[in-house]
Image: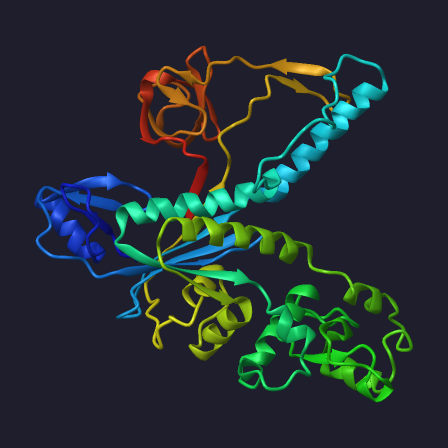
Length: 418
């Protein structure tokens, strides 16, 4: 189990404790629960010694971001989490809304006037789908900083070192001579080709880096001329080009960039600038270095383990035994849409402006103890509120609000241990 965060009576972060030690403090009355997620206790006294510094390590991703809090001295992973972003959902919803508005304008129905012109974007503006990713990461860094003595941050700023990939023939640069050079190209190709053979499409087997146009035919080592192939396809292709081998589409696909990688390059830059603005020392690293560290330490592939291995500060021995990974899913804080429409753009539902009913709001985690009736028993889940006072808890509908006990206020995220 992951360590328990500890605060003193002045809410100063202390050294995280083993769960057994935290349980003793709770049973003896020396501490009380301060927060459930991440689990934090607060002591009834002031700390008498300084805590050991911890490092927050971040592996940003387009869909999932890995977070880890590591003790650089002992190599112990104190906390680990994976944040599921909703950037793709935001992009899709904005596209749907744009389509509905344009459809109604074209049919001369009631609509809002277009605002495509005379609109200015503030400096540093990001599309909502990218801004949400950066906001999720910054939110959790600030939350962890309040409960843990974090003094440094490690951030993966680039997925691939494009200088190393595009100029592989350059000599005299020290980092191109080391064992790390091949990891940059291989990681890029694995992401680009979906970790499968480009010719036969098979997965879960050893893959080899293969030249689309063989070097004997004038091909280069540039990443745009490389792909992944299983041993059988690589041998069968021989000195043919991909088009001669019956796969002309591979040459076109090799020229296309990674959309997710392009989006994350922007997000990582924003994260780096905002983290530097906080005054914390920020260490940076590439995706190739992250994989190199993970392979050298014999760790399996996972987002939170990638976060553990970000940067050159990664301890030689990493202690991950017993770590419970917290899965965090971004849900948002509702929306401001007052009128729901069907797929044709016609109104079908009107919402009230009031969000809180009888002290609860949609998304709160509650426990309902119903003494009698068809819903008799204990039900735990997220609540959907109504003005009538008959709420839905999880999948059970029609529970009166007076039977509810709040466990966790809706904060825009859902939690589940992985």
